[in-house]
Length: 557
Ligand code: NAD
Image 1 (tube, helix red, strand yellow):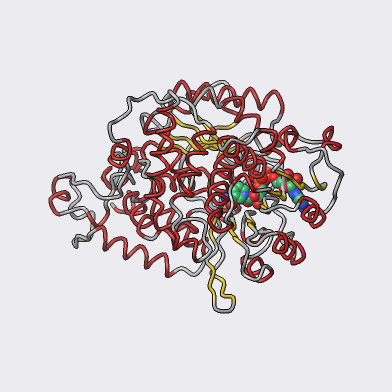
Image 2: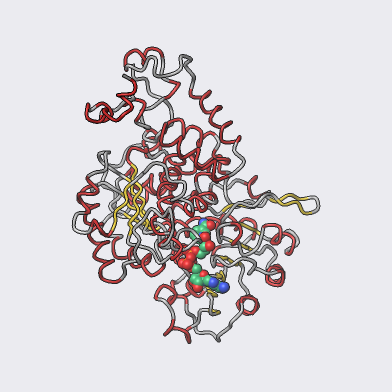
């Protein structure tokens, strides 16, 4: 008898085509695992399918935390957490929310970089939608296959420039999945309404094209008119199938990122986190540093190393902030200088410069090295967004400290190995006077009697709150003024205690409070500028707070 069952007659009898485990346990949004109560087990038909002892959510969190800590390898921790997310979302989010400082580096940077590189090899279960060039002509049909109704938040990548790792093609899916997890954990956007999407248009990465476990299309990247037509169809499909959705562009290559943002930002609520989110978090750091420098935004001259999405995005928002404080736009732009891979960005190079650099190409002699540029421009702030490590040398940091009582030095390139200098170098070479922040976390640094806690200029402080605010008021557009409001709010939340230890960002432990404040500021801006599609509630903050997802179990019986 048993032999007959094992010998393959089962499919013909239809048995295995029926779900074998109760849907309550199979759906990660409903599953409570060992926390289903006795009443629920009886009512939902789960008795016997679970071990008899009923656990509380707190006990499950404790057990899961111990399981994560038992693994010595960050990627193994990531895999465990991914499986937990796919099994029981309330438990996953409770764990992340309650242990945010420990969990964020595991579900997002820096671990997510390694996870993307290995995404094919560690792939177990699909999450989100893969929309490929093969779907051209029927993208709306593919979107309609998503099982959840009323998607409100999409993070989409085409995998061309994943973190600082370059073209990872379909392996880039780790980024939309991770960013949306941060939205739910850090800003309480309900995971049911979120949708990660990877647009697979091929890859130029030869290791992937030949890769044994590569999960994407094995073809070269589609570019030009065919790419643009694919994106246009995708956006039209999103508007048709998910008309309420906010769309976040994520990790697109330079040549497409600026173009797509500008082409579509008025067609549907959308923003690019690499450009605008980074700008928000960096500007917030600058604003928060002002009580330490003792001067104002108008007194700053900023020199950027790297003139890509992050650098020019930050400069554009700096200009918006300075103009809001009464400075003329040309003057504000002259306060921003760039050194790219070919040297100082100046007018005589205009013919060879990408469009996004042109507003910052000043009439100035050509300079090839950063050290010379620092000496000539005399910046108050030096911001590294070049992806090139060890470029803020001792000579450069020392020079910044000669020019300024409190030099602002932000080494924002990720991951840690790409940072322009380390926290220790910035503090040591400036005799403890640098106001330092980095893209990836650095441990506290002790110098003589003082201990400095470097701030992490992580976009996590900005985009979840901005997204929550936009969704809460159903803004029809995401504007630069909203990012300015977000940056100012974040800077305001930096406490004197934070500043006393050198940290220009609040502790990550406060992230849900930070996101709520930012969401309130963003929604206020949307209402004030007539972009909100929802009526303004009497108490905006209370309204948003009441709609945030709290990872707690509901009672089903
Ligand atoms: P990008 O590719 O758009 O731009 C990189 C820029 O650096 C380009 O202008 C390039 O010309 C320049 N560059 C390259 N090598 C250089 C060199 N040797 N000297 C001077 N300039 C050089 O990338 P991006 O999106 O602007 O990101 C840049 C870096 O910033 C990445 O390492 C990324 O991880 C980091 N970043 C950090 C945050 C954050 O911490 N919040 C956010 C976004 C980006």
